[in-house]
Image (cartoon, rainbow, N blue to C red):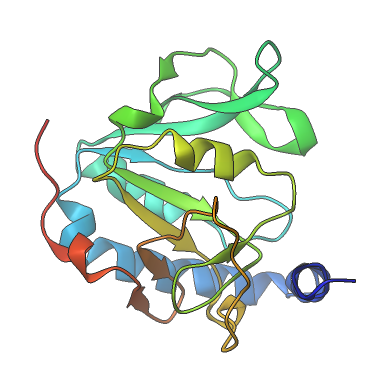
Length: 199
């Protein structure tokens, strides 16, 4: 078993064992930090995701983005391309259970990943440089490759999911710019602290 595989297995097991009250408390801390951080608030379009499998809840993040009158999109499986793509999401969007049991919009309006100013990225583990361990399928890696160069990429996780040891990165891996946890916002790329450019 490789270092990444061992880290993935250990963190998924720990995540699934978290009690519900701890998850909800973490969600509130996450939302408060997100809402108060100027570089995030200035973005007008967000690529979010709907948490599942005991991930740290993202609903507060999405509610804040919608309250800022920003455009939001979430991933859904595209059977034709056999990949995830972003589709429009708003407060009245009806959700259905999709691939891997992940909720996704029933009615789909495709949104280009390149048009999104901020991307919220799930992960099983991250390091301080923004390197990421996902679930091993490569779906979010494919989405990140479609992002605009100036898009802000934000890894979202419980604080304990940030590992002190560096995560091995391949040449094709794309690190995130910030880590947003229930306890802090860690900047991995100071260049992204500036306000996003308007389109």
